[in-house]
Length: 241
Image (cartoon, rainbow, N blue to C red):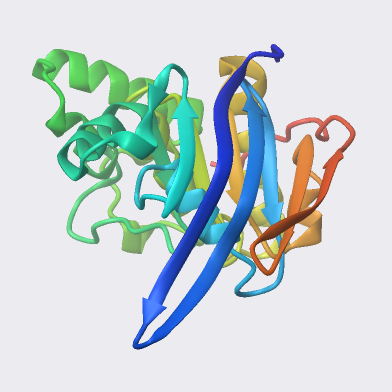
């Protein structure tokens, strides 16, 4: 991991209007995320952690303040610019996988690449590399209903990394898994950080999942109340095929 910040959040405010009421979700937030860092965001419901994740991922825009990813100020982009930027720079991992049930594992992983100017051969190479990394090369033709929850989430992670994104953002990636499968998914995220120097930002309610990150941010009522550096993640484990 280097000390170069890949994400810079400066003087960030986010509010919503509900009728005549203004709801402050994030207030005066300043955060740096280093390149190759595994960061966990925690806090009670309504603390603003998912809103912060969505802002960094370019899914939403702040009321005021700046967000820079690399040398690009994403908080100043238009919706169409953000859509193009997300395609190339963000890989998403969701709690409930969001796989298309009628598509195979291969086809689900290929989907983000269809938005990029690649040949069929280039897409195939990247899909096979991603599925090999998550150790699902023997499940290419399986549809989601034929896979366990842990395997479905590994397909989701392969889809997230297939474009070689700048950031991987994970929203409760272990929330729908048993403890064994959750541990395997967290070990896979460790592996992506260690072997590919991927920057990972994860929202979680689970303190055991948060322990696997290198650094923990705790939000309450839209404010950062704790920023702690943790020990190195545990060694990776083998995944069942």
